[in-house]
Length: 319
Image 1 (tube, rainbow, N blue to C red):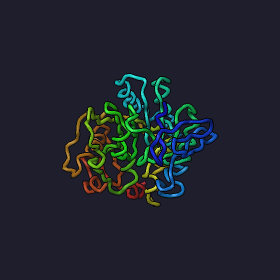
Image 2: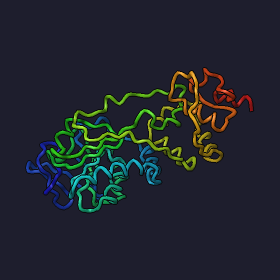
Image 3: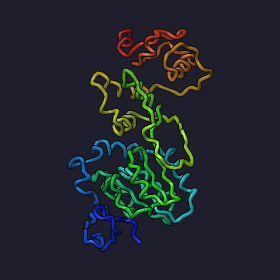
Image 4: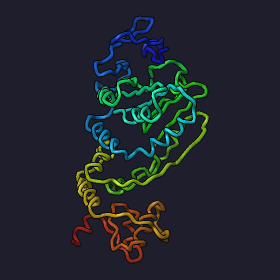
């Protein structure tokens, strides 16, 4: 039985050879790469909606290295709590890494759908596994039948709560992964003069919350290429001011000369933003001669114990 629905009339879609068709004779071709384009023109915000080619290539290269697998494993552990076979929809699947890895780990007994608004992204996704239902579509008009999905995942993507409610089964799981306020905080400190954290109050969904996890893990970026790919797959890369572009060279130096240290005890400081205390604690543990930062809350201190706090240009002038 098909779980796909016509995006025009929401009647079931049946696959017949290289096309899929509903009872009202709305027909859609299946591309030679194996994906279905079920995105209607009114659902498009532009001719080429979705992430840029540069961002998609960077994300595929970065995710293929397994850096975000700890997040993926947390999601998969939640899915394993439901008995199969399951209908699983991955919203905003992008280039398909998470969807593909779900199928790889959870097995073939389930039916997997990956949906993204970017045709280029979905075309890239077909390179992982053509047996997955790869769909070009809009999360505001999801082309699946009402209450047909056992699990809907949304990894770092915006969702539409009305469509989620329509598509999910009564006992289904919606797993929404969002960035917490400290996500990529170290990179943000490098590229922004002032780091702003935003509340997640706008992304809490009005469903029965079974579980909520604030998952935190520190990862070590192995080289400049991976660091650059991480930046390019986020909006931060495109917000870097021209004078901050040397942060990429800084990242390369970090990969060559930096090492990990366990903080021995928390620092004591009158600093305004307590989130920065870990940097002062690290400086005490080393001990560090300098902290180089663009953070105004740090710079206003000037000094912490025996550690001087300078911006990048001031430090360069010393050299």
